[in-house]
Amino acid sequence: MNTTVDPAVTVGAWLHGVVRDADPAALAAVPGMDGGPVRAVRSAGLVAVVSAAPLTEYGEEALRRNLEDLAWLERAARAHHAVVDALSRSGAVVPARLATVHHDDTRVAAMLAERRAELTGALDRLTGRGEWGVKGYVVPGALPRTEAPADASGAGAAYLRRRRAQLTARDEGQRIAAEAAAAVHAALTGYAAAGRRHSPQDRRLSGAPTAMVLNGAYLVDVGAVDGFAALVWELADRHPEIRLELTGPWPAYSFVADGPEEPAHTVREPAW
Image 1 (cartoon, rainbow, N blue to C red):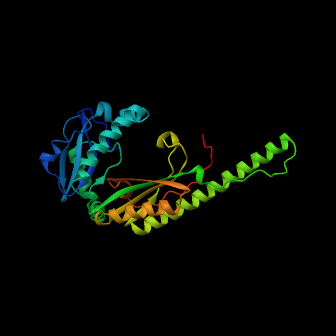
Image 2 (image 1 turned 60 degrees about the vertical axis):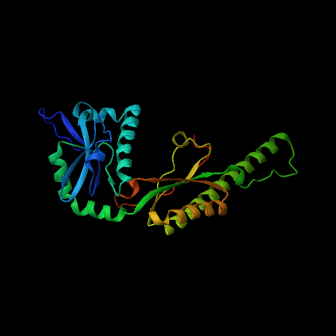
Image 3 (image 1 turned 90 degrees about the vertical axis):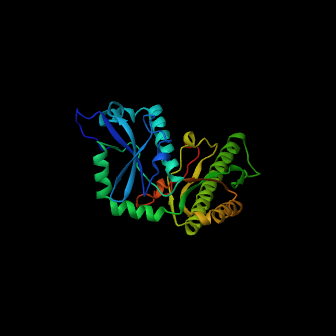
């Protein structure tokens, strides 16, 4: 959050993203955070797209409170993403992090000048490419099963053996699913211009009935999308122990800053 306490200023500038150019007429049709149209701030050969952000709601103290409110956060995230998505349909965009609020347009212009080389490099890297998501979920029916020994003696002993067999099968299934997810990610990253592996989503967020073992993002050339999709479905056939889901294209949120990939996480069922 880039806000400065100044009682004379009541409206800041919420930064949505940076592009090379923007059509004012197109921007006029895109609602910003306050419901009014977004606008362009031009500097150093770049364009920052911002919307008015009343500091009573988007100032530093107000944001600190509001970011703890999940309903408010969801509304803000949707409004922010809608602008970034609209910009991405016209070309490369470097999306801003959620809740990046500058004091005024002058500060936004200064940011463009200070970060010109970094932002220009990012736009060059993203031009002609889109982000695609591939999620992988455990398929319980495809996991190996271990049968209880046939010579079980006694109900209690038989139950314990069945329980151990179930736990062994579950752990083995999780291992196989994790290995499949790693193989899928490696193949897709090799095909794409870049790939990142994010932490699996909680089932309460994903809405899936089984655990997520792959949450990958891939930067794909526009001309290679059909081949990328075909590879996803080929990998799905090759690894029936996980169900793959392809989504996109998205603005390249995962590729706007270089950094280490998040580690793959071992899934433990039931996790919640």
